[in-house]
Image 1 (cartoon, rainbow, N blue to C red):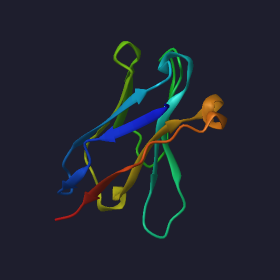
Image 2: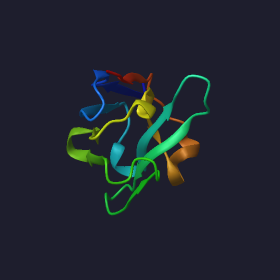
Image 3: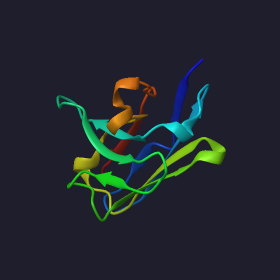
Length: 118
């Protein structure tokens, strides 16, 4: 059974950091572009980052460039999102999913809540 399982969300103060993790189960992560999306209340889902299958190229949304770092460990079937200098506007449910050329594969996690508030 194909699954993407996120963890690491929570409540953090503005300026703080969180690290999200995503475990890929039931398929070979190596073959797919994989990344992160987020959806804030009342807003459309938006792309945050997308890593190429060979880890050679990573796309970031302008709103997170310089603050977020995405990475993958194919050997462990894991994907990560290190989020620094968090802002209240980063509050959203974050989803791990196939992206880019692999978007049509349609593998999505269940989401993890990130709340940035003092």
